[in-house]
Image 1 (cartoon, helix red, strand yellow):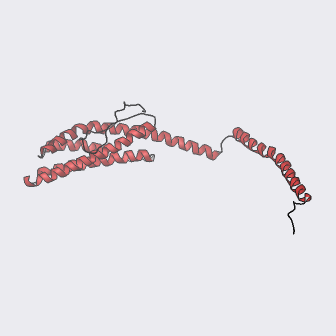
Image 2 (cartoon, helix red, strand yellow):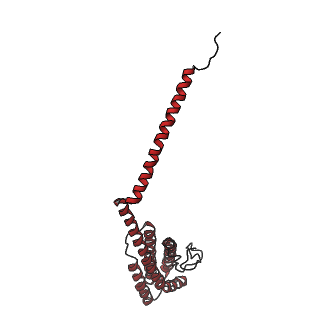
Image 3 (cartoon, one colour):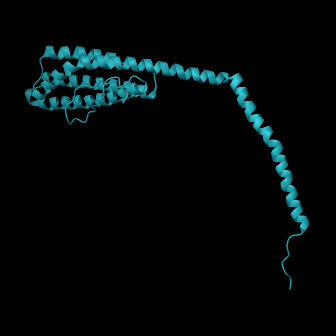
Length: 224
């Protein structure tokens, strides 16, 4: 009956020899590899970034400066619109709640102020995505407010029995536009914080329960 035997001694010797050779080769190559990495690092530090890297960095810096400037301009425009439309919307809201058409001269004055706001927000310079969202939201909100005013202006031309439905429609349009403004104002606040300007609250007055965003109460210019 055959029995198991160990591996021949010459096999063990060959394995040991291979390990020794591999160890020697690794030890010889390691300094060369490390020297290559170190040399590449030193070369980069001496030579500096490539022309492409420099161009990309300059482009990013230019875009950041442009976006920062656009944020400031957009915020200033939004403040002007809020300050000018505030009294108009307050009077309009009172008239809508009264359920009666407003005098023609009053409507004309409101429209003049609203037209300026629409023109102010009509421009759409390209900026970062976040800034474009705020800009587009403010523009859409102002257009919506103008539409609500136009709808309300029609009330005076309708028979008494048909006025209530149109007044209700104008009220819904005004509420929706006010909510849209509040969402855009929240975005405007956020991009100002991201740009290092701190909180900038440019909200219109809205009715409780309308679903509109409101100021978080943080002091103007703070980052928390």
